[in-house]
Image 1 (cartoon, rainbow, N blue to C red):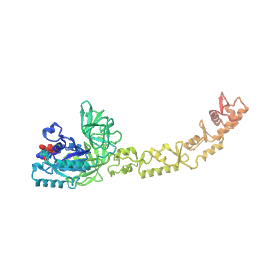
Image 2 (image 1 turned 45 degrees about the vertical axis):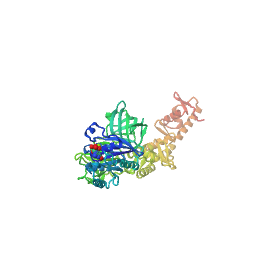
Image 3 (image 1 turned 135 degrees about the horizontal axis):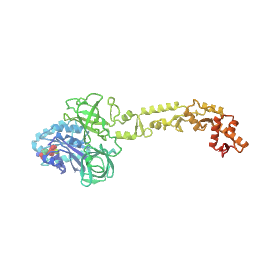
Image 4 (image 1 turned 60 degrees about the vertical axis):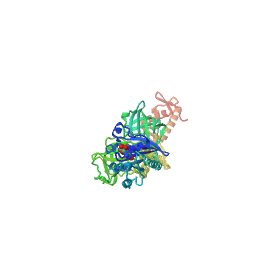
Length: 573
Ligand SMILES: Nc1nc2c(ncn2[C@@H]2O[C@H](COP(=O)(O)OP(=O)(O)O)[C@@H](O)[C@H]2O)c(=O)[nH]1
Ligand SMILES: [Mg+2]
């Protein structure tokens, strides 16, 4: 299956040709039939040889160019129509430029109305003229097939050429990321909202949850149709109608997109390349009322030329595009757009979207399509975030993060430095951000202990802590921890080297000595001892005797009975 758009000046025979090839009149509106003029997009399909072709028939009249633009996004190839009687006309030129800017690379040309022209020599001349106009474009060398539609002349050959076109045009790419730019919305009797479009990028299936952007409306696909048939699922490169549950048809408009939830990063501004048409008679700068045609939509935009003030006709540069009405569009690098100037009503050029989430100020932005640039500008980016912004999945560098080499090196170096500078306790892991923690996890010489990270094998600096020595020397009347780092003190307590009770700090050995003293006292007086008796026996003041005795109670060495301490279950023998 290939989706092929018609193109060419008004009245040159596009719709008549589609009808002749498919048997379906693409002009479906009453007004179109009355005026004999295509206003909006028309659709028809046929099979040539073994290949299915869906035609998107576009209006040729300049007044309906926006409808033409809504139809040509996502098509695989074009059927370019030029009437032999009139030859190359303004919208022949404009449509060709637009298709080229949109990245269409394949097509055939039909030279219509050769029956009116009659003279074979004039027909030859008309073919040569068309060949000259398409020289240097993607249509250079494409077959130019003379046809006389009323008599059916040339239609067999055109059909053969279309079959060859369908065979040689690459199938629409499947990136596992479906997007359907909506070109029609209507309410189907009894079944809610139906949207149609050319499906690109991936597969959609019945029952699937989707989201309509930019209104950001969740919906479920109740039914999928293509070529008038109901199917369970449909891949890229097809004309598709989706029956959506959960959205009102008034809430969806042409230009919206149906996408899978959570996979996109809808944006209201982007950086893009801009190729300015050589036929333009003036430079392109930020001054001007511009319209950007993206997907099937038309959006007023503000423009900032990057790295220069203006772009001359025939040159290509980069621009930052701000969507003025702030619709957040689900875009990806590689998407094409067309830029028109609404004041002058002229096509200015077009290009490729390069960055859907530009983070550098316009003065410094140098966008291109490289994923590495997106990573480098940020240093660190979550793998899912990177995918939503580039459409590409990259293996995380550490944890769920992808980092530039530079950012990883800087983080590694600073972590190493901080570990070295951390002092006896080690580096507090809680003080690190998520990325630093992920990098720390890759150091295999680092051990984690009580929320601190220390280089393994390094001698335990707390063992020789000066306060420990002072406490040991003080015995049961130790010095207060004046000037001792609170974190270090906490760590000494946590490791059981120091005991804290009621605001007093003791060496663990002093508590052991107190327990032995209690055992001796109780051997003498099994009925119990008072705090004062303990104080006198230990040769300390009340300040230390009270917390020591409470520590013994807490440990079960002693038990309190009135004013006395009696033997507890853990009294040393
Ligand atoms: N005699 C003759 N008339 C043609 C031919 N192709 C198109 N026409 C007529 O040209 C007019 C415009 O055709 P239409 O398909 O509406 O042009 P479009 O605007 O390009 O879609 C119609 O009246 C057609 O019948 C042709 O090959 N020979
Ligand atoms: Mg038409």
